[in-house]
Length: 131
Image (tube, rainbow, N blue to C red; front, side, top):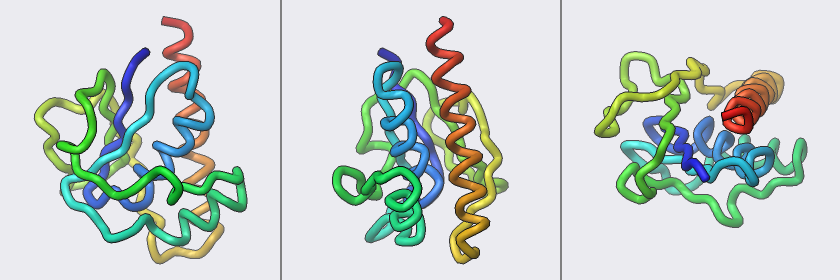
């Protein structure tokens, strides 16, 4: 089974959402991880609240902010869209989803980002299933 990592600088919002949705939708197709070059003391609380509300997923149960060295070597590395400050992870990214960080934005912006991540996860699931 392929290992997929979703990478962001702080590993507190978009990459955590992608890890959770990867486990939710792609659990039988790939292993899902997230990481960053820095950590935060906790996962973004708006992301935690909205993921519980939308999917019944409690990201804080098994997820936490971690660095790239805390996850196994992966087959696929996806940048969440860090712009000019995207971290170097020791290899090239396989994809860059170019997602703006919704931190500090209203729920509608957060939900739009979450749904965009869901769509990209489902595309990845279908792509890996067809390989």
